[in-house]
Image 1 (tube, helix red, strand yellow):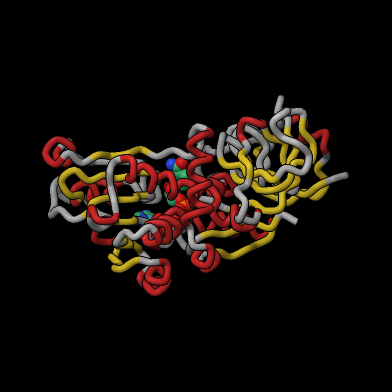
Image 2: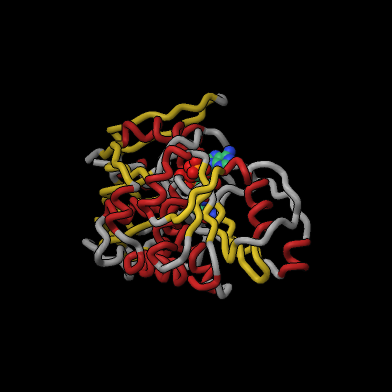
Length: 332
Ligand code: NDP
């Protein structure tokens, strides 16, 4: 039985992305090494990193040909891993899948048992992919702030890149947990959307986007930053004494030009957040929290669904910063 997937090639330096409906199990096995669990996928999604892979904008894909897609949700179809049985409902995020191992923008994936986690009861495959790596990373950021002692009564929380995937889920989660959330966005016409997710105030991101002083007026008890560059530097400069900044992204840039002043004069903590190689126990904790703490009506309001054929255009749009919230891909 053949199956359909997005298929990326680079031949003599020429990159191409196309839909193939004639992929075979033999090809899947040949490109997935010693993976031991075949998953029949229902849904995948487009994260920022999928955007980079699908447009070849940065060297995310390191083996060719590649089936992209870092996230997937579906049902175990075959397994030689004793931890996973046929029929189990699973989700996958990260682990270099879609980069060095064929991924989930596909009707079928062959994945390692170590990489999978059980889909939490209460979340459908579509909802799990509406969350996806972006939402699970937002939860990791919230957990990092909590671990640093930030609580709803600590003060205001800044979320940057607020209308994006990580940002939208972070706003919804934090407001649901009782925090006073201030959303920074370049899309001021999405102010009502951000308020509907729970933001109490909207900031024009332009105020954070250019180089500023390393110490500015103290405002934030905590920050979730998916933007990096000057935005992160300014967020650090505005964080209150003893506050914490969870940094997970680079939508503005990889650079970070600041000084040690916020750290040594205000005891500000910069918390790095990685979702890709995050240990399984922490992932399970994050997904359990998402199933418990994320308002599913808000999740629905930030999500739209496309088919596999539309994914390449969504990739272009996400890199242009034009996508609001999250995009689920129905692979069937
Ligand atoms: P999205 O594109 O959905 O969101 C990014 C948002 O950042 C945009 O919507 C926009 O929001 C803002 N933005 C875009 N360009 C700029 C710019 N030049 N300057 C300032 N703000 C900008 O992406 P995701 O939410 O999926 O991912 C966000 C970032 O987090 C990416 O860099 C991604 O690689 C990273 N990430 C990291 C993970 C990890 O494991 N560490 C996991 C998941 C994501 P607005 O218009 O509201 O300002």
